Image 1 (tube, rainbow, N blue to C red):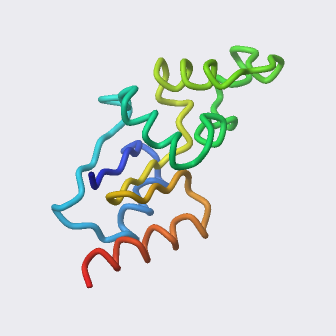
Image 2 (cartoon, rainbow, N blue to C red; image 1 turned 90 degrees about the vertical axis):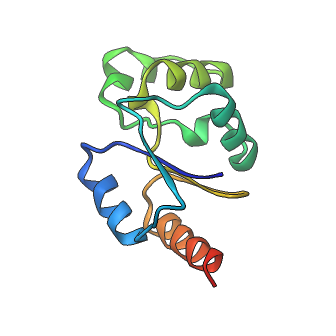
Length: 120
């Protein structure tokens, strides 16, 4: 699978998509229009190690819902991400067996290298 889960209204996600310079071999999914499915979320979790690593604690709803006051379990993180796209630490990038989560500079650089190596 070659897919990027992103938020089209996010300037950072738009910039990253432009930087990656992807072609038609990658499927783009706007999570606001069509949130991630459970099977894919589980696949990414297996690659990164935990749902918490995929969860955005910067989301405005994180504080407004009082989640910052709670001791969330892995199943809680999963549940909230499936219910509300805003909790996804985006973008989620899948290039075959490689997964990249979030917009940290080194994460995006690694994704760029991985994508380039797919086309060598």
